[in-house]
Amino acid sequence: MDFFTVPTATFGLLYCFFIIRHEGRRILHFNVTKHPTTQWIIQQLREAFPFDSAPRFLIFDRYAKYGLEVPVAIRFLSIRPVRTPSKAPALSAAPAGEYSHLLQVRVAASIVPQLLKPTMEQDHERNLCGG
Image 1 (cartoon, rainbow, N blue to C red):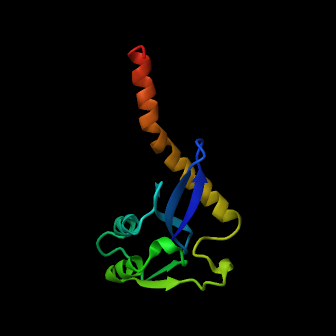
Image 2 (image 1 turned 180 degrees about the vertical axis):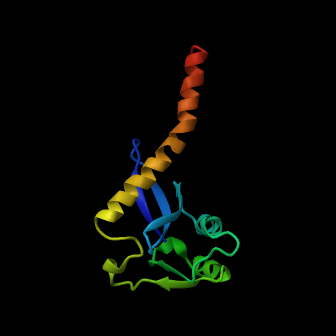
């Protein structure tokens, strides 16, 4: 479980949350928000692991947004939380190197059309109404 950021055209930041299965490097869940809160992260965990589909372990770093509540929620899902060491950035929960870049491109390509849809619909309506 990890985050990466994507800059927007208006100089903002989007936080992309993702969970991958290290075996096979398969994306299990991803979502995006402008403001990642602890409650939002916990909801993403619920959506990622419905019913009895949770893994035995979940590796994540020491990102401050996780707070104390996220590890508790992970345990509540019967998952053993595994935090990476604070002084070892090479042991990040995210895949290293070129694969990480490909994951970012793949997730961003999936998210951008969803984010633009409301704006495109508004523009389409304005054009139809002559506005």
